[in-house]
View (cartoon, rainbow, N blue to C red):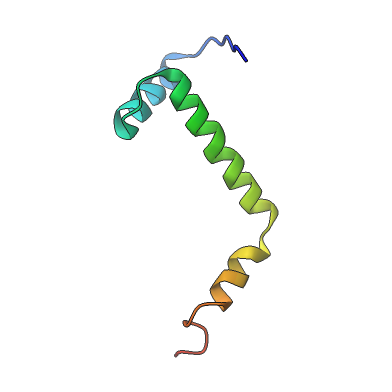
Length: 64
């Protein structure tokens, strides 16, 4: 899929910062990472009980 977008200076700076911090080569790589991360975060929000289930499965519960 080809996407064409006009970005403001602030957004362009974010893209360059992410490229540097993550060692990515292209804007395409940054967008893929951002979309994947956002999708995973939204999916995790959709299942709020999963965090509690994971916590209850640890040894921390009842250890105090």
